[in-house]
Image (cartoon, rainbow, N blue to C red; front, side, top):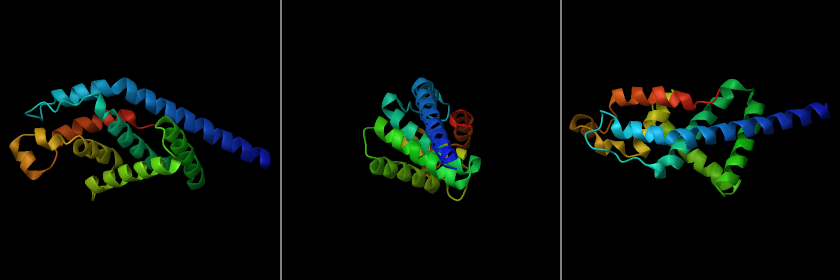
Length: 168
């Protein structure tokens, strides 16, 4: 029994390592292309000038979105342990305490839920969160800008991009 527990904890730790490393690599290598895509998107009448300074916000949106999916792929106890390990590892990367980093993740999670309400579709919520975090409303045509709502065509294009950042 103890051997199984140790093996399980090691597996959680390894899984968290793979998760953290692959998410970091995906965001670091792909964010420049995403920024370019947003800057060139036809939904905007003015260039949003998204640059590398937005990468951390993008990472947090992707991380919070992915953490929502853990429960769908693992038993509740395993998902909780894996999430804890992921938070620990990201806290080290961002040079924060686990408590501080978890607070940031929870704020992003709440933000995604809030901008996505009443929908429960996490992918759609990640796209909407990106729209709002990057203040993209300011760059839209007057119709959508006055509604303070993202152009649905832009959201669809972002969904097609964001799906590549969901870890499975």
